[in-house]
Length: 117
Image (tube, rainbow, N blue to C red):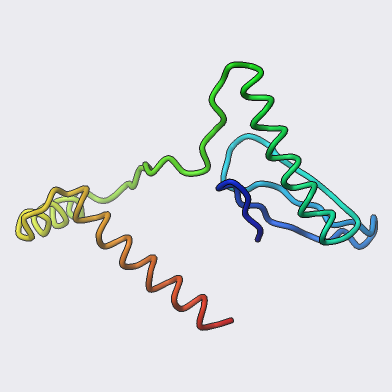
């Protein structure tokens, strides 16, 4: 995966066409790019993101943000109740309690990913 200005892209090799092609994966808008080699691929990725941002600016619209910081989680009512009670016992809001635990889990997962490399 590659990153530029907060946009993440996955890259694949098309053996038949003998090209590398990529797509931004953390936005609903479609941003794609392709190239014959890795250095050109990186330039094309940057160019595609920059063109997307310019296109949005020209339209007077905000580009879709890669991550807003908000997402919906659906839980069973029982799990929701248990989390609410745990948050209250910790003296925290439900949002703060869940955010703390998700951040800790993400750190653990990221550490394991780095260790696996």
